[in-house]
Amino acid sequence: MQAARERGVDGPMEFDAQNFRIVLGKNDVVNLHNFYHDYCQAPRAGRDEVVAKYSHLFVRSDIPDAFDAARRNVLPVLRTRAFLQAARFAPLLDAGVKETRFAMADFSDDTALLLAYDTEHLTRVLGMEQLATWGVSLEEATAVALDNLRDLAAEKFIQISPTQFASDWNDAYDSSRLLLADLAHRVAGPRAVAMIPTRGRMLLSAARGKADLLALLQNAKAAIDQEGRRVSTLMYEFVDGRPVPFRPEDEEVACLLADLQRIALQEDYAEQKQLLEQVHEKQGVDVFVATYMLYKGEDQGVFSVATWTEDVDALLPRADKLAFVEMNDAGETRSAGVLEWERVEAAAGHLMQLDPELYPPRYRVKQFPDLASLGLQ
Image 1 (cartoon, rainbow, N blue to C red):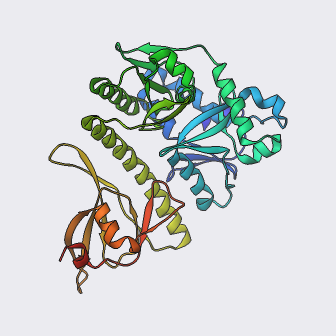
Image 2 (cartoon, rainbow, N blue to C red):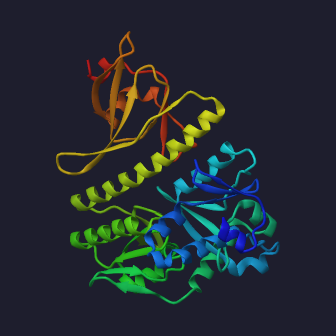
Image 3 (cartoon, one colour):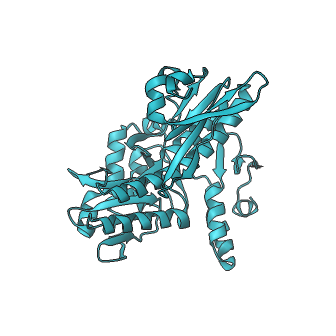
C-alpha cells in the first residue's frame, strides 16, 4: 500500500485480512495471494522489485471507449473456473462490489477462456459490459485477441529433453498459446500433447509413449509447485486445429494425472468452503460446508472422501467416496461405513441436489439416506 501511494494512488485503500486482499474504494480489489507467493519465492535482494511490480496493479488506467483504439491491447487469457467463482462471490460478501459478467466462453472441465485488456503493467479481465460499449460481439473480440496473440514475440521454447518442450516467453500469456495449434505443431510435431499447468507455462510432448507422458506430467506438477497461478490440470491434444482434452490410455499415466487433478480440486474446494462460510454467516444461513479430504490408498494412489452426517443440512463436494456418520439420541456420532460415490448416487441420488451455481460441484443434502438401502446395516 505504501508503494502504491508512492506511485500516486491517493484513493481509499483498506487491507482486508480475512480475504487477504486490499480493497480500493467501493468497487475494486487487489488480491494478494500471487504477490505473496512471488515475494516468498524471490531472493531477499529481489523482493523490492516484486513489491514495485505489484504496486502497479493499483494504478488504474482507463480503457478506451472506442474499440479501434483498444483492439491492439485485447488478448485471450485462460483461467481456472475457480477464478470465476471467486469473482462471483465478491458482491455477495461486499454490497459495494458490482457483479461482473465476464466476456468468456467455456473451454474445458476446469478452465474458461476470457478476454483481457493488456497494458505494460496491468492485465484487466473484460466484462460483457465493455464489449457492449465497444459494439463488438464476443466472437469478434475473441478473433481479434487471437490475432494479437499470434503477433506477440516469436517462438520461445526450451527443449528439456528429446521429446519435451517448455515455453519461455514469461509474458503472462504462455498458457494462452495453447490456443495456437499451429504453434504447438511447429514445435512438437503433429502428435503433440500439451499441458498448461500455470499462467506462465505451456508444456509440450512430441511423443505419446508412457515415459513421455510421465515426463510431461512431472514437469507440470513441478511448475504448479514452483510458480503458483495454476490454470489447468488436464492434458490436451489438437484436433482440427483446436485443443481438446486428451485422455491417456496407459493406466499409470491416467492415475497420476487424476491424482494431480484431485490435489487441485482440494485447493479449489478449500477456497470455495471459505467463501461459502463467509456468505452463509453474512446471510444467516445454517448450512454445513463439508470438506474435500484426500487420502493415500494401499497402492499409493490418492482418493477423495467427504462426510455425510445424519441430521445435518450440508453441501457435499463430489468425492470418490462418501463416509456416513450416524447420530444417536444423545447426540453422539458413530461411523456407519464408507461407500463409493457412484454406488451412493445410484441408491440415494434423489436426496442429493446439485447446486448449478457452484464450481467445483457441490450437492445439497437435507435428509439422511436409509443406510440399509445402501447395504450398511
